[in-house]
Image (tube, rainbow, N blue to C red; front, top):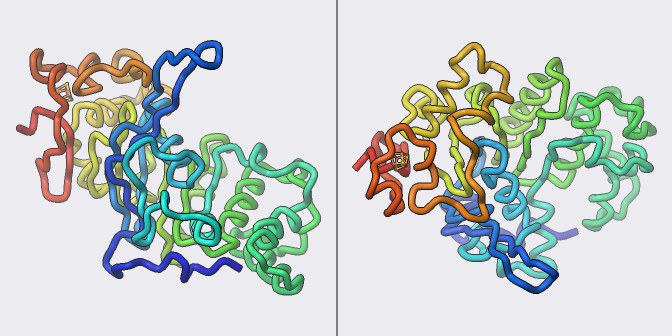
Length: 336
Ligand code: SF4
């Protein structure tokens, strides 16, 4: 089996995963060859996540969150910049080291039914990653499969091993997805809108399950979500994304109680408005549509929608990251 030792950090104090100047662009071509432009899904993202930290990347639909998640998973190659995991650049990983990286990062998808192969039972679904990563002993696989089911509270495991995905409820399917993501004992778990397709009645249970497992295992957990209203309960730090960039980041309480960027302020105002309690309304506020990632606005991407827009500055120069409060960053010229 590929060993985590292949990815030991060079420096014990280094973050577990960090992105520097990260860009993931997708070329658009007409008739297969004529270049039309590039969709700038991730466009200059920087962050560093410590081991054992739970964070949330928050933003409207189409802001680049899922492209960022897929870049961190190694499913998209960065156009520019790099991702470092345990001190090593993902771009340098090949063969055995790349396989070891895939075992180190678990992924929980948005749509549990779509994520599970319909013709495999739960035992086979959970055995698959173990087989791929060289766990040849059948008894050892069975022990780990049963332990994973118990950990996600599908108990007794015996009752679920022979079930196929269509025989399970949405919440049970998502627990199987989480068990599969954990079965290789990853150090990082990426959960992309893990409850958005579930009934409201099981959302809290799944979020609490992820948080409990994160604490018990000391995992680094990155939630990808459009919903700012619940992040206080499961994230320690928030990164607010807009049009492929992180515009604000801070510890969760400081960000929610003292939002600095006009975009974050608008999102929180929408939650505070009882008429906007429905999360789908978040997509309609602040006024105007999220920008095209093919032709994003110049300079500050938020300037066409911003109530504090300063002509000749916000539409001319990119705002750098300012630190208006301790450990609280905001990319806005208001903090000059
Ligand atoms: Fe608004 Fe200007 Fe700040 Fe952008 S830089 S958020 S346009 S005030």
